Length: 212
Image 1: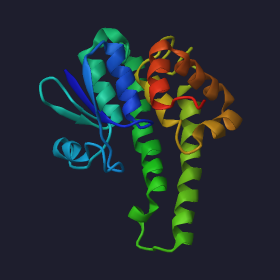
Image 2 (image 1 turned 90 degrees about the vertical axis):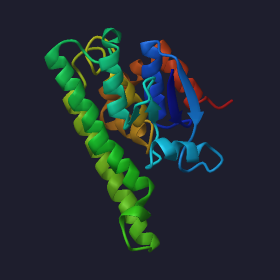
Image 3 (image 1 turned 180 degrees about the vertical axis):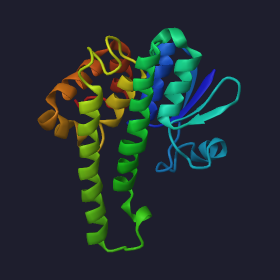
Image 4 (image 1 turned 45 degrees about the vertical axis):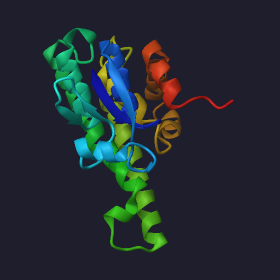
């Protein structure tokens, strides 16, 4: 049994999609550093950084970082298509996963919490950091689209996999989808195809329920 620490609308959605694709049994624990009524203390015991998603594997090992979790699941369940079997295609997917982690996730974390990255507490300084990181985030996604989209029905080729699931989640934040719809419409359409997949749609409906 896997244990998945996360909360609604977070990166834990990507890990949850992957776990379902693998057919793995998992227990969800509602936890995040910004929700004090969640199991944040339990989360801190397995991951002192209190990051989500964090996954405890059946053997007791702990994985954090969305890309790392998806890669490990792909290695444990090689027949699921999370990672391509072809070496060249797999290398491309691994590059894409780390691209998102290094360039997109990092920009979002700075933009969401600018006060952590400066000693200047003036609101104008914080707003400037937010604006700059948002601009950089959009540029990174444009580059991602140019590098990884257009090689098939999905980002990983003709079949969806780990790269598709992570991109579909992380582009939901910081106004990225609206930007891509205007500036990279083909990539935006790919993201919509990914979200229409039954497993993805089911998980996303729980994480981003439609308003009545």
